[in-house]
Image (cartoon, rainbow, N blue to C red; front, side, top):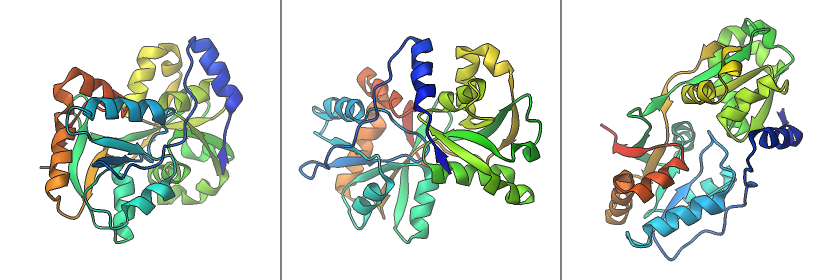
Length: 268
């Protein structure tokens, strides 16, 4: 079951002294120029307009490439069907799901962050939740899609606590930091986040960080994937090379931050 708590986020923005742009609807796809198609089940980007504008301006003199972000999974997957000549940016979890549907996506590049290409998800809770059994009839906050959050939670709980899953509600929030703060605001009893999300919380709100503890961890997975349909053709190779070189320019690094990464490398 999915819950949304707009009052919580208005309150959070007020105390943070900032203003987060409203989540925008992805613009219609571009057919005139080579494109990157982006959809990430692991995070909700609040402003697709900023993402698209930043990438398009960066690439205007570097091949004229475009980025097409999607806010709906079904629209993203509809575009992929048999569409060669494009590069798809998605989570590794999503790529595996598509491969199970016999869509022949292949990894071309993997994202990096501070030298790492992989991450674990952590299930954190307040001091009143000391084990998995105490999560019954509680709310767990997470960023991304509900389906993804459910999959990660099932993985962390394991088969031993599989029956518990039906009694846990999922609260979808924009970012990992929001999921962790939801515990402090009483909107959730636990939260799923990347390990990097906990590191940010320790810097941003050390007092709240000290109130949390880890209940469990997921398996490691790639941060973000750049994939193509089957072996890359010449057009896709050019797109991938332009993507890989983004970290070499300051403007490129600023745009990569919008995706929560700092570079790309080939899969060894």
